[in-house]
Length: 212
Image (cartoon, rainbow, N blue to C red; front, side):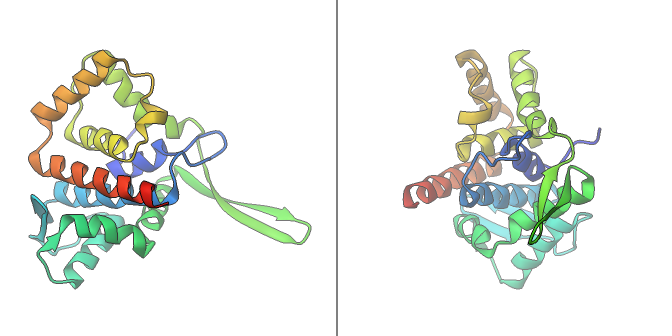
């Protein structure tokens, strides 16, 4: 199976596959998704991150609709941009969650289900495979348990899980040894720009939770 982008995996991990219940508040999830999309633009070599500065270095669209739409937003607002500012701004647009849901629907992980009722019908997104949401976090837990290296995309995903507080739900079974292994991999293998991205995401998510 083709590996999904980190923002898609974060969305999946943040839901219960059986009932589709979200494990995070919508605002906190949107913060994580927006930051993960910014990280994907870094992988596409469309942006550069230095401390709290985010700068577009290539305006050409990516081969992916979600990151291309986000890149359009960045290009439309002359930079360089404040990284913290954009992590705060993106959830307020209502754009990022829609982009990820569209991408997951196109990829077949989500489907729209319509239920007919006496006075009409309701439509909602459901997971095609109820096991899907559990896969990203299980992949991380298994790698840590066997002391296997995570690639950079999964390290960023793990960082976003920690930054949003999702680890309380999906990494709760990780023992101190496995968490120490994850910290060591962050230190040795996570590029510095992603360290800043995760730290800024944690800061925004914490302030959002306090403000609710």
